[in-house]
Length: 157
Image (tube, rainbow, N blue to C red; front, side, top):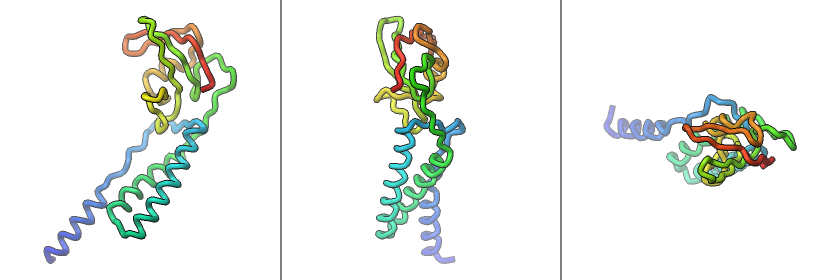
């Protein structure tokens, strides 16, 4: 086997070694916005893949193909969940305003794993805070990391 062939094989293995994106073992609950986000990601990635294929950019094709596999799997397993309007219990897709024992208030909307962004006030339905809130109502207390949070308001968003 020539060295040139070995180098080409190593290069192909490096590209193939991009690795898969891990897929959560939890139910893939999504809000309407989360489902739209998945669809947007798929459309964007298909466009990027077409451009990479025209340029014969093998590395970009490998990375984008991996991401397409991830988002395709997430779309296939997505379970749209819309909160019951006017529910007085914390459910997936709802927002909850909490007050800590220090008087500080925070607002969290419980969403799917892929759409969670704590910096924007959204948390995953499998996060410790969301798990502690599920099924509670205004006036109830949720405890996370030994800190108490009273639910002071619920909203559909």
